[in-house]
Image (cartoon, rainbow, N blue to C red; front, side):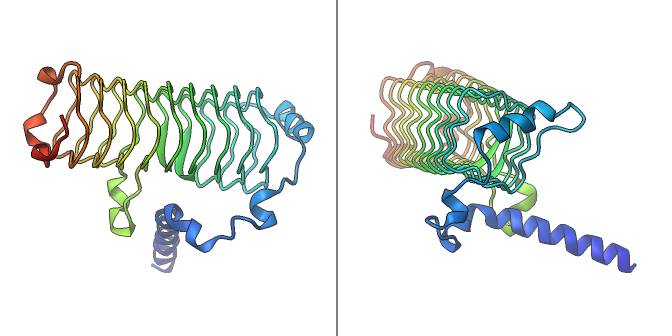
Length: 263
């Protein structure tokens, strides 16, 4: 009985910590050495990668790696749980299947990086640059406020809310005021995602789910909406001009605030 209670309490603590992760910045001094410094060099990171195996991947959990130039490295499968990678250069890096849960990547440069199948749960990625990055098949419940994903791919990715934790706080991707122009979101799950004031000009939303997504003030000019599910999506003051395939969209009549669309 005691063991069951202890296990339950531990599980609840983990859930609570995860749920609070997207609200962590109000409690953190972003200018502190812990957030802006590095305790490893690029050479030391490369050595850790060279020593890694499939059974024992490189583990950088909790490491301070902010400001490093790790561009072009193959970091596939590496573990960066709760690591600090603020303003780190990861342009062209391979992070396929990498674990970046609760990692800090504020203003990180991931231009052209590959993050296929990566896990980014409760990650802090405000103002990160992911232009041309490939996040296809990734699990993304990160704060990407003000980030840039121009020409990036989230095809088949899951950015939806984790409804299991909703009593502790809604964990989902936040892309408020993000630049998502020409984004490939084919088949992506964007249910309950915050896309307020984001720019989705020319984005491909074919087969994507926007169920209950927040799109207030978003720019949806020239978006492709074939088989896109708008059930419950909030379109208050969103700009929907020259959409492609809107007549083939799903549940558009069930979207909220359609009368407030800018067309």
